[in-house]
Length: 136
Image 1 (cartoon, rainbow, N blue to C red):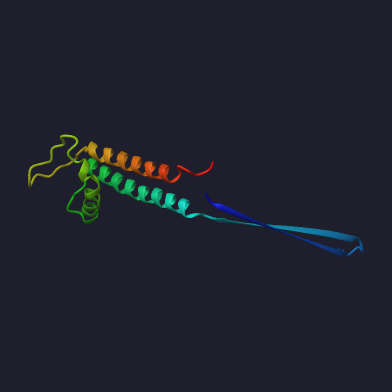
Image 2: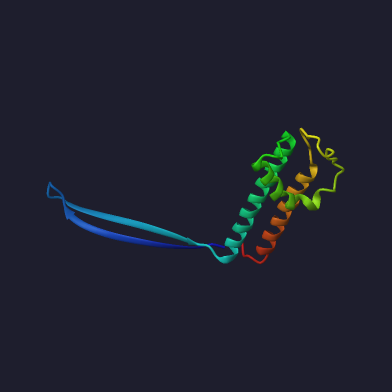
């Protein structure tokens, strides 16, 4: 859990204004610093990595369903990076691919959605393990 350090500084000044009346001024300054412990930083890193993975897998899903040109450099990059992430799930459903030389316009691959769900569950499980003994 994050540690918070709060510093309160109070200063009082007495002076005389233009009319000659006594004026008291009190200034209160509050500084708050938050320092994260190692566990919180690890949890944030896990959620960040999951976010990157989910965005990449989501891009793959959208590009596949819209029939993006795999010869394009960006599409090829997304397919090659996410191909490693979705490979364990590719044979879950019987999605047929086009024969060699034939262009596919649109493909719905439910295995991509399964991969995204499994990675989210894994990240959630790891975070729960890290917060298992954390006081409320």
